[in-house]
Length: 360
Image (cartoon, rainbow, N blue to C red; front, side, top):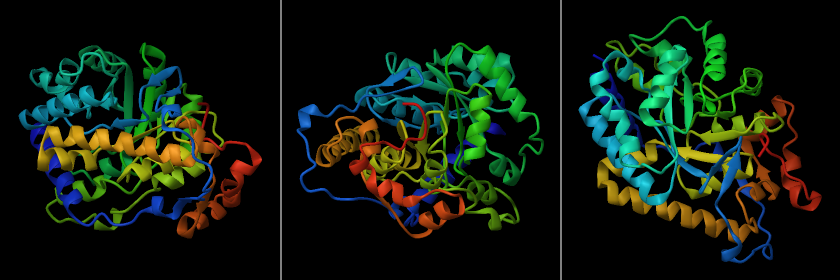
């Protein structure tokens, strides 16, 4: 039953967050400290614009859940937190709604509790044009996310095994809906080649959704009787690697996956993201401590991000792409293998240039 699967996903995702998350490749990105680069806090704006979209802040609550009584309560609280902080929010996959319209309220609560916020609906790449439009209409959505998740589907006991129709179907949805379409991975990353394909399809934004956060191969393997897909846990490209890979693609990118704290947000913005999303970290706070604690966390992240931008001399999120970065460790090796010069990021302030992942 799909509602049980949604509850299982939440339970297993929170269990992952309670485990040792540890390091990821964001830790191999560091800012070069220039001691006299700072500016004045009143001169810093968190507003970000991309693909004709303007957000008051470059942080968003990424797709999580919906489709059951429990997940409806979670979405209500997430929407309240988004409303109180001005943070954009995405719904979880709305496949449950297409199968059972009685669960519509578990998704529409995102708009009901957050009437003036930026809300994204979410469908999979097999959704019909009619379903995509229904999803947008139900949430009065400002944009549509299409999630792609071949690894998750492969491990999921009841998952899809036919992927060849995804590319043309994404193109049909893009052409048919009246809101911007954002295509996102669910935690295995988008390569440069994939982002180029999305650009050709007319997709407005790519959410890179890299490895480092919630591992849906691990979640789906936990739902299998034999746990026989353990070897796919940890599959994919990290979010930091995806940002480097997409550095010269003329398409705005969002960064999600493995974002643990405000420094990761700043790192992702400096690597070219127009906005940065998190899911598991915020879900853990909500489930453990409640909605007030989540509001406090989101507010703190935004304040701390602004403080770092002040210190780094970046008046806007886009200005962080001109700050000097050191790329080290296995991420530097990734750059070498993919034909990327990591040293270019260490000299950006002297050159007076930016290195972004798309039009900003």
